Image (cartoon, rainbow, N blue to C red; front, side, top):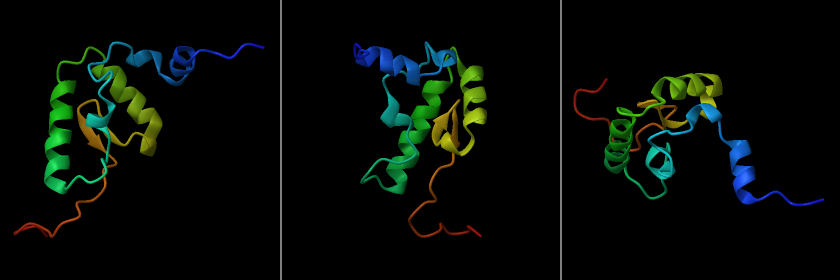
Length: 96
């Protein structure tokens, strides 16, 4: 028995519909949470991630995959924040 190569294992984990995505290799930018990050930094990072999605060639496919994954699709998918943690700080003035 031969052990599969790392690249082969990674290919099995990836969804073929997302090949060529603009986010490839930038996973931390799109994650729902990054350790040690405050609410403002997270908002800035996720806004930057959503801007990357604007010109993505597989935007529609990404949206479909995110719908299929449901709550497992946390972070930015197809330009939208999904299943993000609630802000930690105090509510802003005027927030109800």
